[in-house]
Amino acid sequence: MFDQDLINKHLNIPSPISSIDSKLFREKNVKLFVKRDDLIHPEISGNKWRKLFLNLLEANDKNQDTILTFGGAFSNHIYATAAACNLLGFKSIGIIRGEHVDELNHTLNFATSKGMKIVRVSKAIYGKDKKLISDQYPYSYVIPEGGNNDLGREGMKYLADELNSEFKENPTYVITPIGTGCTISGLIDNLSNNFKVLGINVLKNLEIEKQISLQLKNAKSNYSIYNDYHFGGYAKTTDDLIDFANHFSNEHNIYLDPIYTAKMMFAVYDLIHKNTFPEGAKIVCIHTGGLQGIKSYNRLKGKKVKWTE
Image (cartoon, one colour):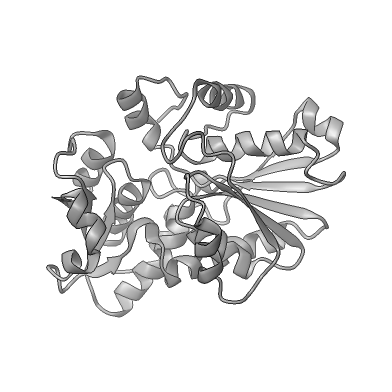
C-alpha cells in the first residue's frame, strides 16, 4: 500500500526556496526567504504532508487500510488527507463539524471525489468527545484534527532538517503561522541552535503559548509568539489584509491564503518595519499551503483573494 517510490515520484521534496526583495528589506538590511512547502504537491501541500507522512506510515505498518480524521467544512487538512489517501491507496473517512454544511463546497466536493466518506456531526457532539465518534469505526487509524499528534510533530523534523541544511549562517529566523501549534512545536524541537522560531497566532487564542510549551519534548527558549495579528480570530479578515495578500501576490507571484499565510506575511512586514530583527538577519517564512481554501473563502465571503488553480 505505502509505496515510497510513488511518494518520491509525486512529491517535490525538499521544497524550493524563493527569495523576496523589497525596498523595505533593503532599508532595514534584512533578507527574506519563503520556504515553499505550498509547492510540495498540488493537492497535499504545505505543512499538511509533513504532519500526515508519519501517521500514514504508522497506519501502513499496522496494516490498517482506513484513515479517519476530523475537520471543518473548509478544512485544508480534510482536503490534503483525502488526496494523500487516494494517492497511497488508503480508504478515508472525514468527520465534519456541523450537520448542515454544504457538501458541494469546493473542499468537501474534492474530498468526496478522492473517495473520502463524509460524515457530518453536530458541533456539540464534535466538540464534546471525538473518541466516542471514532469508536464507531474500530478498524480505522485515527488522525486528529489538523494532524496534531506526536507523529505530526515528529514529521516536522523533515522540514527542520531541510532548513538546517539550507540556512547555516547566523542569525536566522524561521516564521510560521500558528493554528493548533503542531508545526511550530515540531520546528522548535528539531531546528538547530542557529535558529530562532517566531509564531504568528492566527486565532484569538491566548492559551496557545501554554499549549505549545506542553507539546515540546524539552524545555526551549528559542521561540517567540505574536498574538496581535489574528485580525479578529480564526478565519476573520479585513479589507486591509486582503489588499495586502493581493498586492504581495501581484508583486512576488506567490499566493497567500487569508486564513494563515497572509496573516503571517503581514506580520513579518510589520515586524521588519518596527526593527524587530537585527541588521543582517535572514528571515525564512514557511508557506504552509492552504491555497485550496481561497476558492471557498471567496465564495462564502464575497471576497476576491487572488489565486489560480
